[in-house]
Length: 117
Image (cartoon, rainbow, N blue to C red; front, side, top):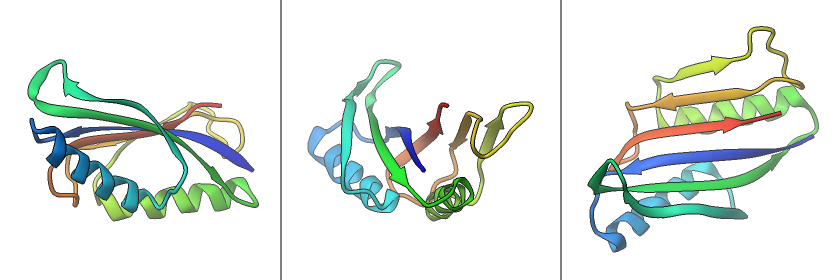
């Protein structure tokens, strides 16, 4: 099973070079090598921060294994998440979205990770 994930973050830095360093830390914590940058620019709501958005694929032998891997990655970033699931959630056929403001990653104010069926 393979799913495309979307990851957004608000980086607490107005300088591009320090925002790039923080974005590399994020990529390392996500345990990904292949990704596509969707946005990397000053955040329109607050020019003292950067918006960093990427998409990437994760693959696993089953939906439950993929979900466990996602939860492991999320636990590296934060121990507090707001998770939004479909009303009739199932591992194979439902959307998933999680956001956190309480991060273990220095310089990161907010993250959101999701996949859409």
